[in-house]
Length: 270
Image (cartoon, rainbow, N blue to C red; front, side, top):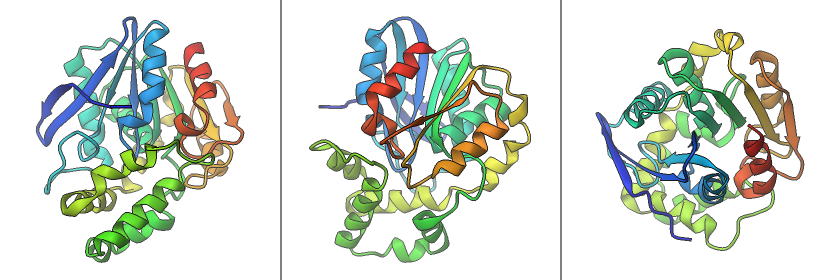
C-alpha cells in the first residue's frame, strides 16, 4: 500500500505532512516512536468510511515530515506543535486517538497547551511510571555511541526494536516501510536525535493534572505489550478518570498491527 501525506503545515521547526480521509465529526490519530502515520493506514481509511473525518500526520522528526539537525523533538515541543496543528486545522473539539509517545503528546496539549477534545482514546501510551527503560534508556545515556554504529548494525538494531512492538508479526513489506526513514546517514542521525530528547520530565509536568480530565477517556492495552507491559496501563487506569481499561489479548504494543479489527470496533463506539 502506497502511503502518501499530501498536505503540509509549516511550523517553526519544520514542515508537518498530513492527510485527511472521509467526512463527518473529526478524529485525529497520533502515532508514537519510532513509527509514523503509516501505523494508521487501515484504521484511517476504515474510520473515514464509517462517517468520520480522519486526520493523520507525521510528527516532526518522523516519517514524511521534516527531519533535520537542531529540531526540538522533546515531548514538550511536540505537545505545543500538536496544539498548534489543531488550531491550524480549525477543529472544534475533535476526538483524539493516541498511542506510545503520542499519548504523552496528546495529554500535554490537553493539560498544558489549551487544546480541547471531545473525547480521548489512549492505548499502550507513554505516561506514568519509569518509562525510560530498556533500549530507550541505553540510547538516552549513550546516544553518542549509537550514533556511530556501522550502518548494518544500526539497521539490525532498529529492525529488532520494531519487531518488539508487535506480538503477531508484521505483514509483508510493513517492517521495511517503518524502517526506511531511519536508514542512511541522515536517517540514522534522525533516529537517535529523537530518542535522546525524550524524557520522563516532560510527562511528570502534567501528571498531577490527570485526575482533573473531564472528557470521556477510553483506555485500551495490548496484554502482551513488551515495551510498556500491563502495569503501565494499570497506572493510567488509576490516575485518569476513564470508562474502564480494556485488555486486548494476543496483542503487543501496536494494536493497529496486532488487533486492527478490535481497535476499530472500540473506535467506532466512541
